[in-house]
Structure formats: C-alpha cells, structure tokens
Image (cartoon, rainbow, N blue to C red; front, side, top):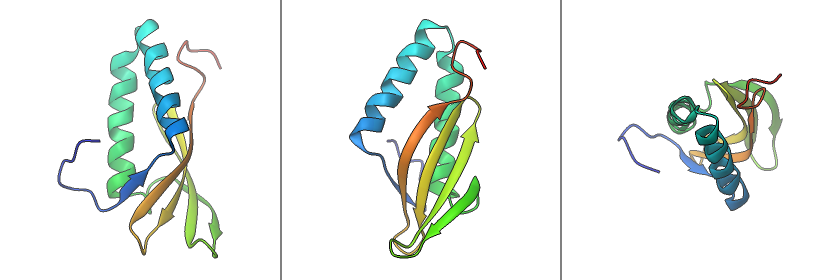
Length: 105
C-alpha cells in the first residue's frame, strides 16, 4: 500500500483477504459503486495504520498473543482485526461488506 507518511502501525493482510478485497472491488465496479468502495477502503487503510487502537470496537484481548481484537466499519466495508501495540502491527482477520454492494440488507 502507498505510504502517506503518517503510519504508526504496519498492516498485515493474509493473501486470502487481499484476493477477497479484489473480488469486492470488482463487484463494486460492476454495480457502479467503485468510487464509494475505494473511498471507504482508503479511509479504512488510514484507520488501521494510524489509529487502530482507538478506532473500532474492542471485542476481546488475547493475552498470549498480546492482541486486542477489534471490529470496525467504514461505509460498506467491515473489518475484524488484531492490534499489537508493542510491535505496532495490525493483523487483519477478515473483511466483509455491510448489506452487500447491491444495497440488499
């Protein structure tokens, strides 16, 4: 991902979820919602790289891994992620679409 100079945390995304994001983007393009999807994705990148420990909702703490598991939503994209404050790393568990790109609930 591109650096804008403000990152405090590195973001680790498993290859499976990179592929899923590409599929979501492709679906957004087909439905004419590419601009909205990309805007949401850009804001999500900012939230995860700059303020992941303050943004989203804390769900649980995994002491052995020293990860705080959180859930956040930006527009139509949701994300489950873990924050390791000591290593300044965010580990994405999964992404999802809220209600689908076609506007269905």
